[in-house]
Length: 246
Image (cartoon, rainbow, N blue to C red; front, side):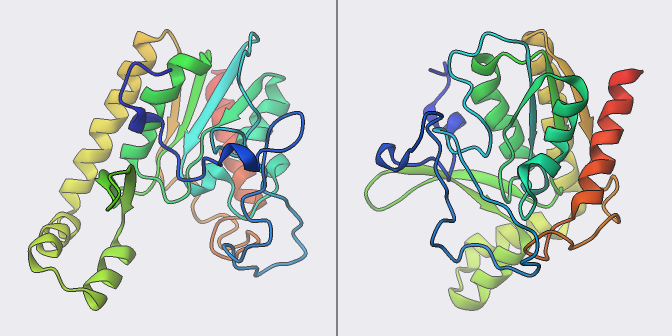
């Protein structure tokens, strides 16, 4: 278990134990679900998640050298078959297992939080981070039953909520935060430096790419028509591989 608060490991996709199937104890989140819109049905894929809610294989009792990929939806590979994700392409190139901690809608805060929760347990030798957009952040919250989770905030959600349920104080703060780019930029930079420091403490090599790298490649060509396609993942993999080869 993590030495941190359990929220460091929180994953919105973590399954109930009774939903786990097969020898690798995975489950299909979107089975019989409409959670993903389908723009390109010719792209065939099946979302399989491990017992911790990540779209990757199980690292329990792993004794081999491994790497970790971490980021938001483009690391998760939303609308992309696993074998075409940039993390899987790095795995194929290096021959080393790459565990994917991609988190849909994730922020720079999410990246650092999950790294603090999981890296010491997975023990990779290298960590590859594709940083999410700057204008997102997250905070812990409790529901009426007292259960705690982590909520991601981003512009579209904030503006949508303003239209539905005006809460002047809260939304004034949110709009103030989002209205000044410096707030988002400094938050991302804080997280980048935290990630570097964490990797140094754990004797792991740290590689990272900013959000805008190759964003114009294969735009909206994933199955859902809202994320970048396979050519983008190939470009990101090649960028990380070139950093490895330096």
